[in-house]
Image (cartoon, rainbow, N blue to C red; front, side):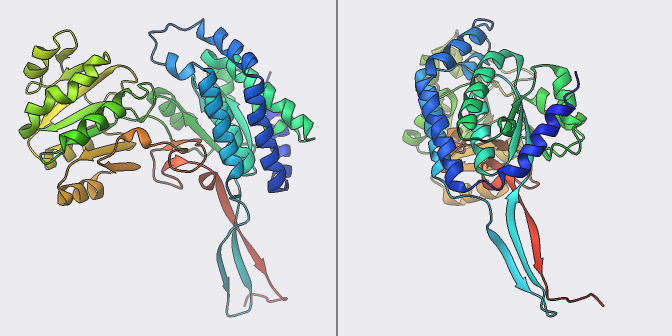
Length: 414
C-alpha cells in the first residue's frame, strides 16, 4: 500500500508542532526519557529479538545492541536536549529599509524531516528528541536489522505523546523495506529534508535516488597523523581511544599515519591495540617492525587497506616522509569526516588544521570526540560530511531554517 496517506498525516502534524510552547516540548522530552528508563525491559526484549538474528561477528552488532547503560545514556541525552534553549524564533537579521519596511529574519522548523538509517536503534530516540525540540515532525525509516527495537521505541514515544494530547503523527516509523525507502525519497511536497545515516552504500543510494532535498552524513574514513615532533605520551592514549573506544562508529580510527622518523615508536603505539585484538594492515616500511611483535595481528596492506571505513577491530598503518605526504594521503583517502594530528610543532599543527578538508579537525586529541553530545549540542541527528547548510555534528540549530518577516505601512514598490 502506498505511504502517501502516512506522509500526508505527518505533514499535517508538522503544521501544529511549531506552535507548541517550549515548556511543553521539554516536558514531553523529559517524560520520554523517564519512560525509557522505566520501560527498559520492553526495549531490551525487543532489541534481543533483533540481536538474535545477527551474528556477533557482524560489525553492525555493536551498533545494534542496547544495554541498560546505553539506555540510561539515551535518556540522559534526551534530558540534555530538553534543557537546551529553543532554536526557534531567533532573530538572526534585522534591518529597516530606506522606505520604512521593517525586515526580520527568524529561525523556523524545516517542517518534516525524513531519516534513513541502519542498525542503530538509538537514532530513533535521538532524531525524535531533536526534531520535536525544534518543531519538526519526523518520518523514520530504519533498517530491517533493528525493526523490533525501532518499533518498541516509537510505541513508547507515541504513548507519551498521547498523554500530552499531541498527535502521534509527529513521528512515524515506515516499514523496513526497500520500497518504503524509495517512497520516502520521492515524497515531494511532504518531506522537506531527508538525512541518510549509515554506510557509504546507503548514502550513495540516497544521493543518487532522492527527489527531496538531502544532507549527507555518516561515512567516516578517519586518520590520525603522528608527526615527527609528536609527544609519544600523548600519542598512545589518543590512538587507542580513537580506535578502540567503539570500533563500529563513524568517528573510529581507520588509518594511523606515522612520520618515518618515528617508526621506532610504532611498537609502543600499536602494542595496546594488539592487546585489544586489533589487526593492523601495515605498509612495506611499517610491516617488518609490527610483524616481529605481533605476527598473528600484523599483515601487509593491500589495495583496499587505505580508504576503507573498517567499523571493526582492523586498521591500516601508512608511513610518510613528511607533513606534505600525510596531507596528500588524507586528501586522497579521507571522507571529510574527522582527522587528527599529534604534534608539539605548532606550525605543523596550524598547517594541518588549515589544510585538511574535513568537518572536524583535531590537534592532540582523538577523533572519538566527534559527537553532538560531546560538543555540547545535547545529541545529534548525524555528522554532515558536506558543506551546504550544515557541516559536522548536526543538532538543533542545523535542523532549522529561516524565513523573512516584513512589516510595512502601505509602502509600494516603484
